Length: 257
Image (cartoon, rainbow, N blue to C red; front, side, top):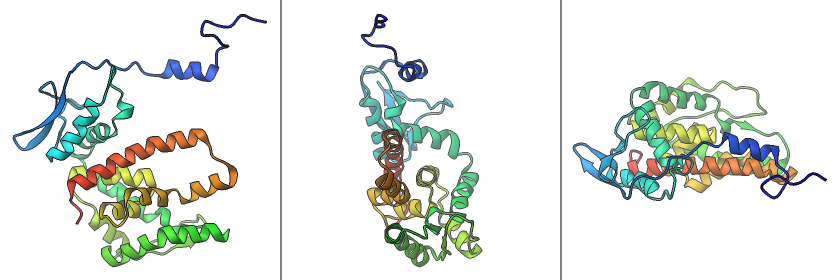
């Protein structure tokens, strides 16, 4: 029998590949992270110096509470700075560097989701799944009709169904121009696959956990039938952290009332 490698066991090729692909994280170089009001923005600071985004812009939020929430992620870092544990910071960078200068196209991307929203396409069977979709999704469609004035058609299966232009226009009109709320709404939409669920979350029609559960009705059903996939659940947990960051921004911005 071959001697074990210098780790006490035979090398696992998958784990070895992960170690190679794992980025080298920068060491924490600051003692204190905080936020302060400066001019017309609230700046995230490390030892009194402003943090910069990847595009070298100042990392600043429109409200002190939001800037403080971002600073808390920096303060929570230990020996190294791990962006994977900083979803609010990543979202803030995306808003500052990628949304602020192109609000129109970002809003249009959200509106495109409404043209083929997750909530429109229903399973014909089994009855238990049909009922679960109805329970989670129908109240959101009813809310969209009542509050947004958007009435949509639903269909069985996955074949595309054209939606009324008036309903799509109503959704587009409900999407904000303000960059932070827009960026958070875009993140929530793409993570859930539903502009309507994202808007319901933003308007406080759905709490965070219920919105996330509604977005995963089909996935949860399949796991119940075929077993839970540990890797899929790990990826889902990472997406939920990003989703929770988007929900935090929507809550602290208070654009939707």
